[in-house]
Amino acid sequence: MPNVTYIQPDGKEVTIEARDGDSVMETAVRNGVKGIIAECGGACACATCHVFVDEAFMGKVGEPGPLEDDMLDGSAEERNACSRLSCQIKMNADLDGLRVRIASEQV
Image (tube, rainbow, N blue to C red):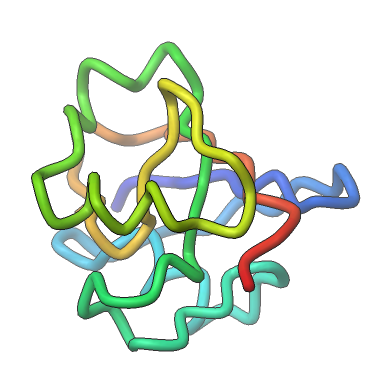
């Protein structure tokens, strides 16, 4: 199973083994990672799971789709080129070692 490391707003790092096919958000919520609110439960409707993907993984996670792109425009913390909603990133073997920094403001 692939590992994902969450860098929390306070700088603390938490590495968790994720199940294939689960989103980065689902993995965080299931394991009590602080900072991911996930108000909509993964429906890409709230932008409360905003993360910044490590640049080394941007090619593997890809670009946000149109709905996610719109949601990121309204995120509490300003987006950048590495912004993604963690509910839209599905874990798989290619993402083993993924590192994401959780946005300091979600609402």
